Structure formats: structure tokens, C-alpha cells
Amino acid sequence: MTASSEQQRRQWHVYIVLCADGTLYTGVTNDVETRVAAHNAGRGAKYTRPRLPVSLVYTEAAGARGDALRRELEIKRLPRALKSRLAAGAADCAET
Image (cartoon, rainbow, N blue to C red; front, side, top):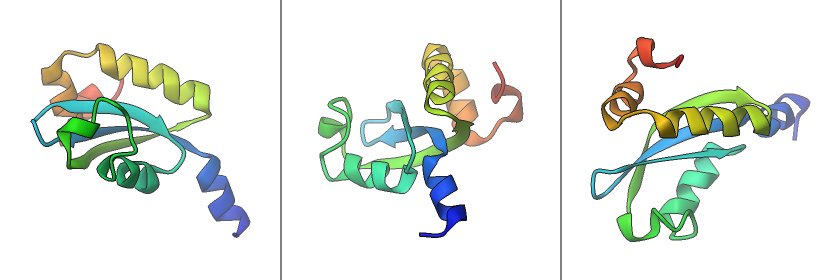
């Protein structure tokens, strides 16, 4: 693994997936692709297991794990309409 890819791997992200039932799930990870694959394999969060498949609709680099957890909490506190706009790419929702 190169130094660049190792550094990216340590980078934490906040992500939102759209579940099959139309709900949104927000989480944190340091490997988004692997985490979404885990959700779809039934090895992700308990919330998503009965709501498969999930699709990634939003990801945001967050730096350290603590930063990602704080941002996850901010996003989880948003009303559904704002989370949907964030997932759709509305710039005014990116910073709360």
C-alpha cells in the first residue's frame, strides 16, 4: 500500500445510505466502499439489515474519527427534508 492510499484509508468519512424502504441511514467509516458492501451483505448496522439493499447517496470527508462522529450527530439531528437535500447535493445544507 502506498503512503497516499494509507493516508486516505485513515481518513474518516460520514456517509448516508438510502435503504430499500426509503429511509436514510447515517454512519461513519474509514472505508466507504467496504462499509456499504458490508451493509448490503447483511453485516452492517442492525438498522439496515431488514432494509436491504442500500445505496450510497452522500459521503463527506471528516478528518479524524472524532470529527466524523460529531458530524454524524449533526446530520442525524437534521430534519428528514434537510438530510434529503444534503444527499441530493444542496450546498446550503453542507454546513449546519
